[in-house]
View 1: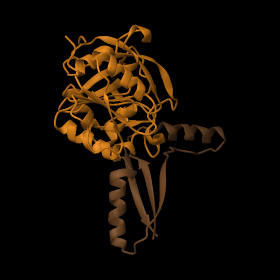
View 2 (view 1 turned 90 degrees about the vertical axis):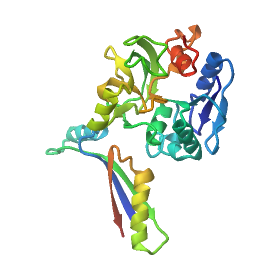
View 3 (view 1 turned 30 degrees about the vertical axis):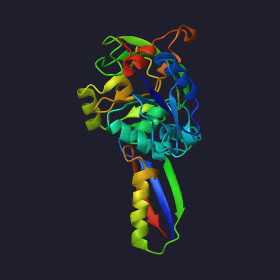
Length: 79
Length: 222
């Protein structure tokens, strides 16, 4: 199984990097760019076949290490 | 007074911390490596600054999950004094020993300069050697010192006097909320701060503004 975990900053948490990217996109002439928020993507290969266990493990991985839940949200997709 | 310094790969202010503690306490601190599961019987544990694990994932995130940090947490729970400076502060926050998070500087730039710090609470074991409201100088050198906490946590920190150091005189170098430079835990025995007081402890440093912090924590201050 393969999983993709996306970690993004929570709403209300200032994202200066997203802001800088937003300005750079405008600078390149892209009109109509609203707010930009940046984040991280983790692609994780899993050896087991138990989907329920994988989902539980991935959630624990996010809570324990991959995301800082003080400032970040995460989402998990299994394929 | 006995102290210990935590060593992790990628830290680079460990020698400064060891030198400061040696000079102020009169004896060299013990050193504990990241894989150590026990810390000797000491009065103070210091986590120095630097870039543990190359700041991979998030500053301090990997270090916070190393075995030595479980030992630090156990000591802290038993009331041992803990100071985390710069990356050490980031590690304490990632380890859950202090609330909130340290984010990328609002300017997106690494800052290396001297700032002014107000003693926001002089009634802590780390600041009793200072006067309330006193403004001291301290060097800073970091890329991720922008302190953030949700509104509820922030209200608690402010209400309980857990904000100990605040950037003063418009010297906030990182956009930190409420100009917060350093905080203590609710028990008051764990301090994290972004500035480097260990780099301003004697005349050769150009001043000794940071010395009273260590003297206070080591119980040497008058």
